[in-house]
Image (cartoon, rainbow, N blue to C red):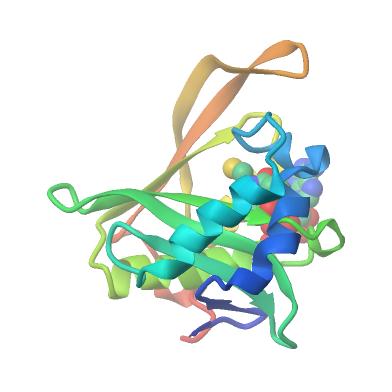
Length: 182
Ligand SMILES: CC(C)(COP(=O)(O)OP(=O)(O)OC[C@H]1O[C@@H](n2cnc3c(N)ncnc32)[C@H](O)[C@@H]1OP(=O)(O)O)[C@@H](O)C(=O)NCCC(=O)NCCS
């Protein structure tokens, strides 16, 4: 388990299935993600079973986010890891909407970045965020990400095209004073 100030990150479990299924079918959550199609419980179960059946590894980093009292509120992952470039992409979803804007996401990001830089020896962690997702951009900035540029009209959702924002954090600029444990 990886410990933050407000949250812990733990390995995913099959017990997470019902919560995950509800979150990825909640349009208020998925409108911020590249997910638009409904997902059947059986499909989510197969995906989660595969995830839980193998140990976490360099190309397979996925954590459940829990509050300090053990309540599962979301998930976060690193993907597209490229060892030659020592870079990867980051995803995060606080699926429990009652937990938005309370600092949990920023804390989870800080914990995951510490893991990426100090344990996986990443040099760069990057992501794409929808331009209208200002809460996410604020959380990313608080965790150390900077904006690199925009992809114009890169996504189409809710009847309109929207820009996406490319953000990244480099190992050398990542400040350990943003790490909750230092
Ligand atoms: C994005 C997400 C991970 C952020 O986590 P969180 O716990 O809600 O965010 P935090 O509380 O750590 O930080 C959010 C910050 O944005 C601010 N904020 C909230 N709504 C905002 C808005 N509409 N505009 C600008 N800032 C906003 C908050 O006040 C907070 O800043 P503060 O601490 O300085 O007050 C979470 O909201 C989430 O998972 N949302 C749904 C899925 C999603 O968007 N995933 C990311 C896809 S790229």
